[in-house]
Every structure is written in structure tokens, then in C-alpha cells.
Length: 317
Image (cartoon, rainbow, N blue to C red; front, top):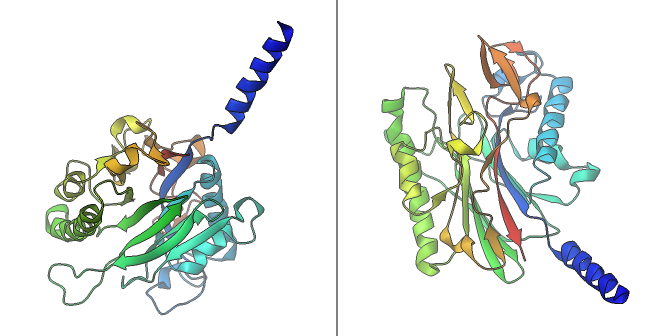
């Protein structure tokens, strides 16, 4: 009897150890991750000589903050970023960092006037990058591309493929109604790409993430929702949103997944959408709790970002 109990306990331990913990897929608008070097893009406000006094000390502090967020998200299998100046600033997040040595980068320069790009990093010890590229589009009223590209990457895990798309859609700066057509254009281009993948394989695995500068109920995100399932909901976080505007929390940072992620070696964990809001990411402004950002106007606050990070969990078998 004693031998049977010992054997059963040992078997249970082995099963427990062999079960892999779910992996995190994260997205984070890092709010103006610029280096301190004067480049060919419009980066004048983020130089040591500018009114923002953006220097090496502040830059290194910003990188440290992003690493802290990645650690809080349990070192994501894939992390998408927006508001990054170039490939080098993303490499500076993880290069020569013992805890992040298994990461590699996917990035392409966009045609954005300020040089603002999107990027993703991934754990190359678990995933193989098969191919990557961009979806580039011309906004209504323009004759040449002038916005952030949509970045995509195709990864291989064992014999299965996973497509990941990172977005940063046009802002609302010119007014919500005036600018909506620009975000609809981005959504339509993303939708065509998604549709092309689904025509090749109805069970294709797609993770779509980004700062869409729109709320879930808006027209452009609804175009994506017609093909993919939204994972970031009001119930995903303590405040019901990722961005605070005039005291109101709203979801601007989204993750969608395809139904192909419901089965196979790579599976999404149901209802795993999460908006991170630990105390260190928060601040108070005019009596409201808001994201703890790097700058308030030209005043250096030393915070993290004006957006909260989001994530989902996937299981790898």
C-alpha cells in the first residue's frame, strides 16, 4: 500500500511538472520611445537640447521601465510595441540583458513623418520566424504613404504556424469624425490581409494586436471583429480601459484572435485578456487615476506610458 501511494504521488508530480504554464502574448504602447540622437526623422522634441531635455539618463530609465512591464507580464512569448523610433531602441530593451537574452526582433521602418514605428520581439528559443513583412497603405486625401505600417510575422511552433499582426492606427488628433476614415482605411487593409490568410486556411492562427486609436464600438475595430474575436474587454482590467481621456477610461489597445486558435498545438486560453494596472503604472491627475506617463506636457514625470499594457495567454503543447 505504501509503495502504491508513493508511486501515485510521484506520477502526479511528473504530470504537474510536464504541464507547461501558459505563455503570454502582450502589446504595449510605450509612449515616445526615442533615442537621444538627432535622426533624419522629426525627432527634435526628443533631444538633449530640446525643451523636453531628453537625455541618456531619462532614456535608460525608460528602458528600465519597459523591462519592468515585460517582467510583470512574465516575459511574453511575443510582445508588440508601438511609438518606437527605430529598431535600435527596441534592441536596447533586451540586448545584453541576462533575463531577456532569448529575444529577437521583427521591425520595418515606416513612412510616418516622426519616424514612429511598430515592432515586435519574440522568444527565439520557442518560436521560429518563418517570414515577416508590412502592410503599407495611403490614407484618404494623401498621395503617398504617411502613416505607420501594419507589421506582420509568421512563426512556426513544432508543425503549426502562427501569424501575428501589430498595429498603430492613425490618431484622433484632427477630430474623431474627421480622422475616422483614416482608421477605416487601416482596418480595411488589415481585413484584406486577414481574409487572404483565411482563404488559404480556414483554421489559420492569427493574433492581431495594437493601439487602434478607436474604441471597441467604433466602425474600424468592428471591421476586424467581423473576422476575429476581441480578447480585451472592459472586464479585462480594474478600470475598464487602457487609456484615460478627460477622466474616462476607454479601450484603445486591442488584441483579437482567430477561431483557429481554439484547437491544436497553439491554443488561446479562453477569457485570458488582461489589462495590466499595477500601482507603479498609475498616477493621479486632477483627482482621477490615470496611467503614469513619461511627460506631462514638457514636464518630465519619470513615468511609464500614457497607455496600459494588454495581454492574452496561449498554451503550447
